[in-house]
Image (cartoon, rainbow, N blue to C red; front, side, top):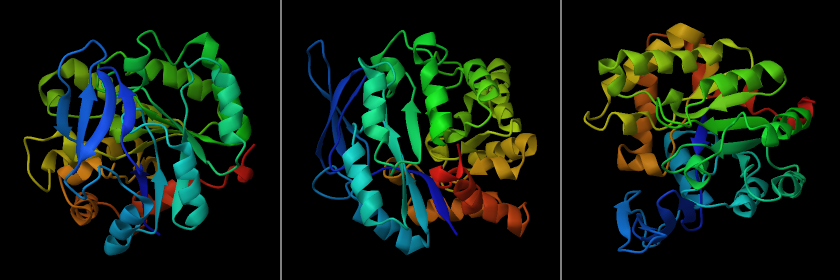
Length: 318
């Protein structure tokens, strides 16, 4: 069973980040419209997959079937926009293929009321908080912190419902890189499963900055706790000076495995954004090549078994 533990679908790009509103303008391009006026910036967020900047369930399934990926975890974030209904419908239409994570902003007004309405559907297995400053909630809410007492209720609610907490903590050393806060949450809520995205976002900067390398290692060490895991999504994007097969991704993947073990790592891609760096088949082949030093059983865990265990049916917990 092969599971992509970090993928995205959206019918259009209609979100918001620190720099302003995001809007799809066709052929994989996204405009970022500043709230303070001035010309909009246009970036090539994805390859020109189709005339509209969208990534449908059918498009993702076609990639999965091409490579032989059985299931995918559908995550959400502010850059693409909130698409809880769209993700829910995809899970319901393809129940054996997709696992859904809800979009939720705990710092929004009346967040506790929204939480109940979103999660009462019983479809979602997880809640994703993209906390990065550039494209996540920390840019939208400059004073946000995971250890805010006003959102402490959320960790209890997730634990009681048996839901996974998926976190994007942003760049190493940034304000959102709150390793200590996550450790406290994990310690106080031992039944809450936590997945940290992007393997803590390693980069070539860690080779040159001992302090940043130590911060990354401290975050990876969260995986020594029984309720914390890491996915490997987006790793090539952090080593853009390299070409396929992005050898530094293999170095940092191996370093993480040596610290916390292969059972705490989930393979993920972050498509469609990562298709700008490699094809879906290359992302799959690259992972298998970088994991060649492990046993067959350990590789199978990273490529799917671990994700199935983490994102197990919510009714098995709580």
